[in-house]
Image (tube, rainbow, N blue to C red; front, side, top):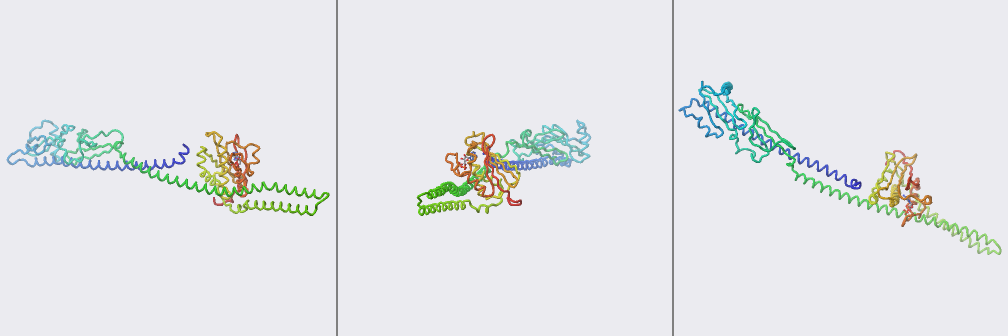
Length: 491
Ligand code: ADP
């Protein structure tokens, strides 16, 4: 899980964010589009209905003007056949009493305002009346709203459209188009506008609900897939690049290690050779003393002894020279300021597969809180850290997987930068501790025993030290000290 989070977590997060943002944008655009369509339809419906009701005003005005009708043809009788939405027309001669006071009031208002006046009927059923006061007769017209709607030009299909359209007057509602219920989750659009007729100032109300269901899920899924493909491709590319770089680094480190190991081998040989040579020297000196006894073979013995001694000294000198060469006196010249944190990060990156394989998560305690910049040869430092980490990982092999701990601490200590690598692995036997840095000392099957000796040589070559200790309650602790770079040196 931890490993998955580290390598893929960021990518999944990016996918999630991009998918979320893109899908939100697609949904937003769709809702905007639906809203725009809804608004346009609302306006068209409003214009159509306004045109229709304004016609009634015109019809009534014409009726009033036609009086007194030439020939008395009573044209109002023919109106319902021309306008199916006009259910009936009543002519009311002046002076005649109205059956209801509301009609008398309407006539008075019509006369006052010089326009037809609305008279309530059963508005919810689509019925209302218009009254126009005129001389010698007033007219009362019954209107059917349902037949008024111009379905031919209507912008929506009244049977399937999700938009609900109603006309409202005095708290009563006439349903023009039922649509779908506007309650529930989702987004709601509303359009309200009063019809453009003073006598029939009905409010046209259109409502529509866009449910989650109507979002463009297909397009959003397509977007998520496309983002996934692009990010997946980038992820694979990046992984390949990291793997290639890691392989190159390992190769480079391997080459350097081999070269250094050779040097170390020579150092080991020198160490081994020095002792027999010293013995030869001691023996020949003893032999010379024997030859001094009676009877002595003075001349031959002395010549032989001198020769042996010369040989021995020359061998010692060769060994000494070899040692001087492999100690790489130029190492001091190659040091530059390096941040310990950086060296650790590089080594951890390089060893990431080893850590993963063993399921070890290094805990990196940075006691210094800022880069600890030491003077070191970067490759040598990298090698030391690499070796120490690898040793610690190998020492953890016997520890049960869940209990493996590897602690890395970086801190300052007087004039030194300190890197501490501690594990709770198998630890070091007390007898082995003083011999750990000797060349060819190894307790590991197949181990060369050159790693720590090389690390120490490298550390000392850079003016530092490397020390080993027991860790509590178990395990080993290696401490590398290197001189701090003078302040102001680049990290
Ligand atoms: P190699 O790994 O080839 O044996 P090294 O010089 O790296 O050579 O290590 C020498 C010995 O030091 C190892 O064989 C092991 O016994 C001991 N050693 C090194 N690191 C650790 C550690 N972290 N824990 C326990 N023992 C260690």
